[in-house]
Image 1 (cartoon, rainbow, N blue to C red):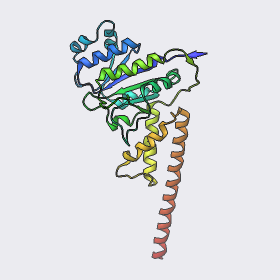
Image 2 (cartoon, rainbow, N blue to C red):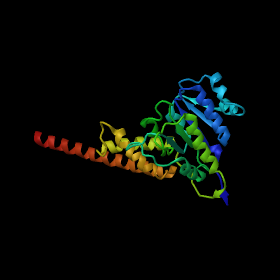
Image 3 (cartoon, helix red, strand yellow):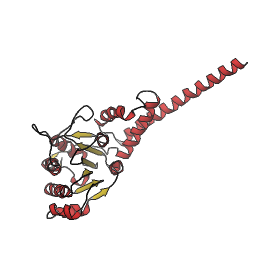
Image 4 (tube, one colour):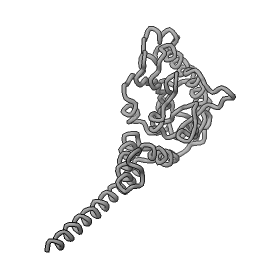
Length: 259
């Protein structure tokens, strides 16, 4: 049996877009390639009269049905797989994939999981804070000049999704943990790992970036997230027990000195 990308489960998310015309061009690129779900997070300017000037024809339907939110973390809560796009790579933002490879991976993932593909503001792209929520980071290969117009970048990704929509051998992909479940796990890990001295309490997020990247290499199922949190609870219980014993020993020593 063969399968294709489930475009109903894929959303294009524009984080803090500045230029209304770019939103319209993005809707047009999505319409060209069969992707219908558009989300704007904290748009700087969402003048619909300017958006609709560039969202021609039936692309207007995408604009009329797009979702506008004001918080990225909350917006991503129900998605099981999140991809961040960037032209700037480095130690803290390794390019893990490219549009074509990503599209092949999403054939299986999109079957039973909601997928978000994030694009940052036109002037600076996604920040490290934005990318911390992503399972994978994708970059578009270029020659000497890497800066692309927002709508052009969206079109390239959507085109590869369209090309990967030709029938592919079926892959068994389970439902993955959504971002609410994952962020709860990461918060729990940060607390526990700080408590036992594994990460520096002065800058825990810096250390958590590597942990997030490590755990995102194999997207976790909800059951696996529960296992990790179960381990965290056991560490909490054991350290609390040790702290209780230490307190008892100190009280015992103090009583002996008084005696």
